[in-house]
Length: 211
Image (cartoon, rainbow, N blue to C red):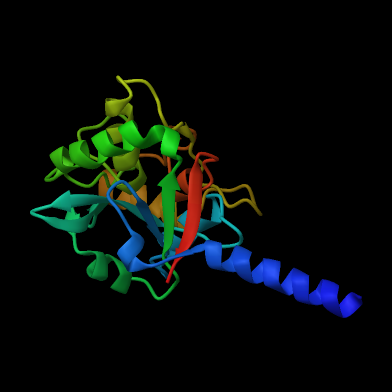
């Protein structure tokens, strides 16, 4: 009897595991791609103060859209918001890519957002990570495009940002140096913002591992 229960439990686990995966050919416009860009003091600091998903931390997110007849990733990355091939996006990270897909009830918003997001091409990357600027960072791109399709009402929610080490409750030295060196300003502790960790944990998303 125990053996049969073990077999059934194993079978159910395998089904659940399989359902958590998705192949490249199953991706579609409107999906979010989450990745961990790896090392660096600032990258590690970002991951340390943002939510994880099942123990996995993400420092970057992009959104799939159709551009010139191809499915590509629209992202705010490096110096500017622009499209990039799916393969180029994936190959940046050594970690597993995760896919977020909004529930079917939001099909209209997803379709509109996947078209409108292309209008953000060419916007400069927001290196200060501040809200309401003429620049934009990765999760902010998704925040603003969905706010636009939602008649300028929040679809996703921003939260007060923290740049403090959760263990010491002190500002990360890397962030202090970053803001002083490049912008001659204080760390914007408590300002509203959004990050990949907040997005991937939104209850309206189904999340899959990319095969």
